[in-house]
Length: 393
Image (cartoon, rainbow, N blue to C red; front, side, top):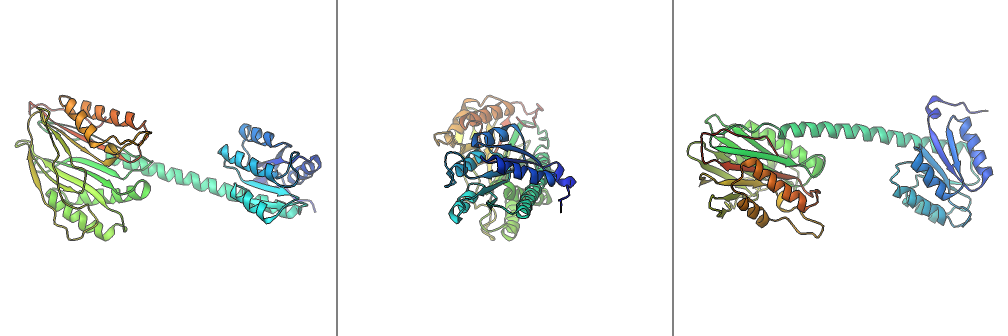
């Protein structure tokens, strides 16, 4: 009984590879009856050329060619070379000299199925249909996944792109760059009801989707706390994260209030990188803290410290994706370099200083960040009445 061609097969193209013309003709006829389009080649090199020139839904290839008719070595080498092309195409192999070891090695090198010659037509067709169907399903899932990730990235970027509010006497510039599509870093600058600026920077342990989900939860919790003091914010976030975060996940977090009139900086540092404060005279301070990261110790009591800021000061907050960015030799950018550059460029406004520091980090790591990198720069103006701000570099 002749097979009936289906519309689902009509658009599927298969590449056949075998050094025997009679085998190719028999397979081509079989596939034509099923509605497939088939191209045929007789040499391994022609397989690679065909894959570079045309998209195929499947490759059905022999394991033995003119140089070696029994071992399957040519076929194994061809499998490796196909995968080196980064072509995500199903590979089904055939041989008259099959054995379990050859089949296992073929699968290890990327084959999805193994057919013994002489073949059964029905079994061949079923194998091809199954592999093409699985591949198409995988492509659909991949497209859906990519779209979901793109949507998630858009939402996350919206979170991080909120304009920095104006604050009398200060200039603030901030940005966050994920190492992957989604990141686990977070920063926010907002105004309190009492007229202060609330600044925070956070780094979720890990990268990618898991870190991004935890970061989103952190942001929602932070928004719910309103104008709470830094130590209270850390204690409440820590309490909730100890209940919700998976084992081994934690957050380093720095929260501070910046007063307009008194120029006081009141902060709580929950295990985050110590900020860099460069005075107008070039001296450098690193406000330290012994408080723990969020999400590990449920009953930890967090403390606050206060620093008096002065005209001309430059305050730099950062995550370890900045300081630990490394070059091809494995050398980290380092806190010392960050402090040195900040001191050398301390007369710059916040946006210019932010640009200098970001450019230096990216140049050091060859534009390839290994971790999410977030940078917040605060410039204390000499004339408090000036109003300038930027949304990011």
